[in-house]
Length: 87
Picture (cartoon, rainbow, N blue to C red):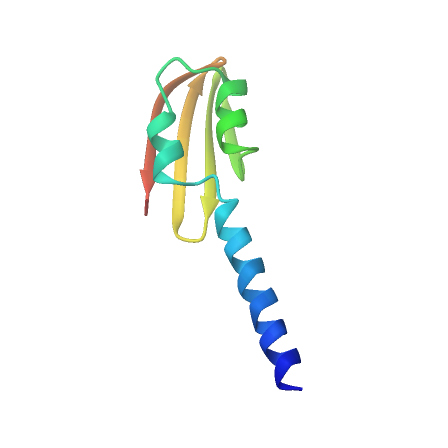
């Protein structure tokens, strides 16, 4: 019985570590962003955004995880501005 509890706790801990290791909303990824990057390059780095708003030829997209977020603004297919919170 005790062995089963310890095993469950170990499995849950490993699962939670795996979830945090998969995060793409990190300071390291934020520092890889560059002005002029394409939409596809940003998606390869951060994954699909959680939210995007578009107006004419401009688009603002947000990637979130908990209280951390990265916002990237595009004109056409090109990054013109990016910012972060909670990193």
